[in-house]
Amino acid sequence: MCLGVPAKVIEIEGQRALVDVMGSRMYVGTFFVPEVKIDDYVLLHAGQAMTVVNEEYAKESIEEWRNVLDGKHGPFFRTDLNS
Amino acid sequence: MANMDLFSEPTLTRDSVEAVIDLAKRFKEEKGRIPVFMEVCGSHTMALAKTGIKTRLKDYVQLIAGPGCPVCVTDQKSIDAMIQLSEEPNTILCTFGDMMRVPGSKSTLMKAKTGGKDIRVVYSPLDSVKIAEKNPDKEVIFLGIGFETTIPILALAVREASSKELKNYSIWMTTKLVEPVLRALLSSGEVKLDGFLLPGHVSVVLGKQNYRYLAEEFNISGAITGFEPVQLLSGIYKLIHLQLEKKVEIINDYTYVVSDKGNVVAQSLIEEYLEADDEAWRGIGTIPKSGLVLKEEYSQHDAKKKFNISIGEPRVTKCRCGEIVRGLITPEECVLFNKGCTPAHPIGPCMVSTEGTCSAHYQFMRGE
Ligand code: SF4
Image 1 (spheres, chains in turn red, orange):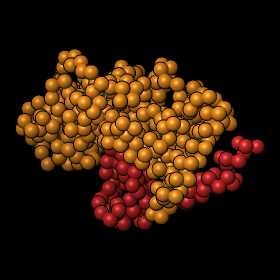
Image 2 (cartoon, rainbow over the protein chains, first blue to last red):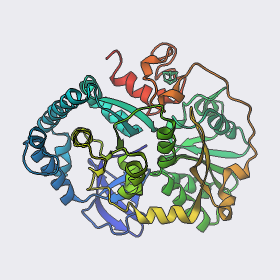
Image 3 (cartoon, rainbow over the protein chains, first blue to last red):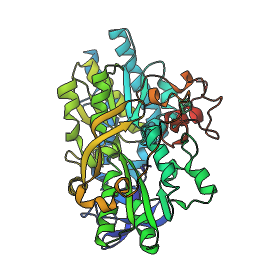
Image 4 (cartoon, each protein chain N blue to C red):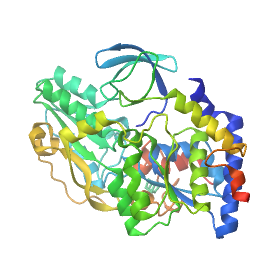
């Protein structure tokens, strides 16, 4: 019942928005994300946008994880375990 | 969106698997056993099976499916009641698709529909409100199954029906809450865990703050993770790492959709319309205050108050879903798995649901 694919907001009309999910368009409710703006990505569940994706955090999260894998800095670096 | 695609990028996934295996080997060297984590959410169970992560890691990390598939934890009596509800005259029963083939003691909703009952699969509870609006001479009932991700949407449907003064709309609430069931599982001591992969979408509503009790009261770590391979692996890695560092923490590894506070709009809507009540869980029994029901002032939209459904004790089968949802056995340990019970002929809800452990196992991990 959970849909993890982010949908891009194309238009906002009151408490609903037209979104694009991998090429298909549909209307979803935006009651739970009053802060939503055009071009935001939202996560959907049962016809409602439940959260706005923070793209900056997504990027940071990937970078942090790459650093972990490279044994570089970050709270979870591998080399600290060998010291 | 480019950044999100990186979470399933093959090279990064491969490197992530290797990193997890390296760290898990280290865990085994230190502790003489492999780490054991429970993924709480049914969508995680499906994602871990589908991406091959569960199979790839099986000699290094044990991943146990938990009680997070809403259909699977619905107790048999409740399922029988919902099927019986479809027999009520002059009604339109609306449901999420997952419920259609769940076996009751005597029938399924699918069979009831084939037999001429008006049962409709809807994508959203709000669609069922529209159906009520278009059919004022019929009673429209929505089967309100779900955890904290779905619950605010049920409250929204009631709000909508209330504001439109739809007297013919009601919800049959059988909602479940994550905290009481995790407390029950941990208190029972039946499963020994080194940490939880915490449900990404439930956490969107609850926020990271909601899980403090795990660390503070049960001394167990948790990582809130997403559903892509790299996200799952990163969560597992961090849980092993905490163990090696002898730390207990709740980590939010899904920061770009989950905040500390969660979705406050959803939380206040829940508070306005719903209140905690005891709920019966398959295989676990009744857990106090583990579900949400409509407050008294909205009882005109409460199907349990509107319709007098009484059912006998459910038929006993050999299905072991009750133990599956508690993480006590794997599907292969059920004698019916892939014999009497397959997705085409399911005996229990764990084989029907798109988030069910038996279904995930049948599709992606059979004989592994
Ligand atoms: S394999 Fe079928 S019968 Fe056995 S526990 Fe799973 S759903 Fe129930």
